[in-house]
Length: 388
Image 1 (cartoon, rainbow, N blue to C red):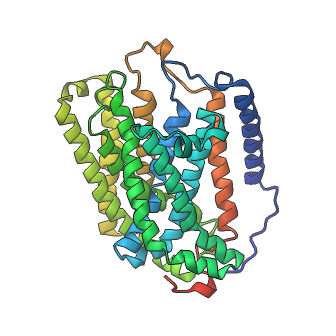
Image 2: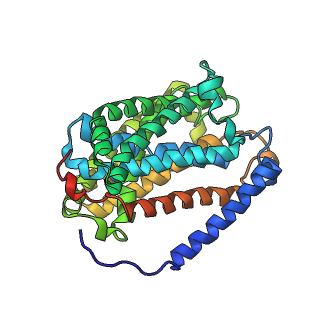
Image 3: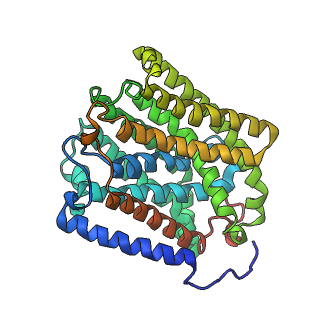
């Protein structure tokens, strides 16, 4: 890790833009919690779940799956060659889930009642309760998994060493929780067969959501690592830089196989409901764009890239996969939802809804920048070398 000084002053263009977005987000926050949902959203009784659910929740949870996929590969399956990717993946997952909970307050309201479903009024027969409970527990697990980096930064060795001993147990528990809530988010939409277009509606939605979370998580680790490589290169030690290409190649093989499995399940779901006739419609063309352009295409790109050791091709496949997962979640929750309603009654997010989602993402990016610039995320702390 180099010691070059990268301090360029606080008021850089990026920081100015960040400050403006955060200020706008705070104003919208005040409007939402003082004037109600109608003041900032286009939600109504026909469309009670909008952008904040489709993007902030469904996409956020799927793209944060890199935490359980990476940690399970390293600690459960013993693939120690991916150890350098664990902390960046855990950090991304922790911030992703924390922002999901943060953004959910805007949609649900009454933040002071967040603990009610967990501790006071559990609805044990509700899928939403299961999702809420699993997310609550998994955020806690991710916080504990991330905490050794914080304690190393703070010099609290005893606490750090105690928590480090729980790594395997936390990883296994995190995989179980992820399996439950990733699938349950898809199962929520099984209850609306008359509202969701047949090409996206399926009794296999729970399976589809879970299987798709695996390439989403692996691709997000590659995507996040690519974005972070240049600005945080000075924070990366020799081990991280040496293993970087190997991590990308290994993850590309996993992403290719999981995308192939996802593609097959999509076809099985299509055949199960015998929805082939819809492919001749405009909706069918859009379904083909999603499945061929953002599932099959990156699957093939990953396979070729891993075989040819073509890192740029793999990175482009990661971009397509990340965008494809976002597109799928948007299609299920927004585009193909209430598809039979006339255009005048269809939901489209308001400008303030979009700005608030940008605000949430900016909060996450700001927290990420703060953490990686101070804590041992891209390098091993000198006092804990090879302690894994």
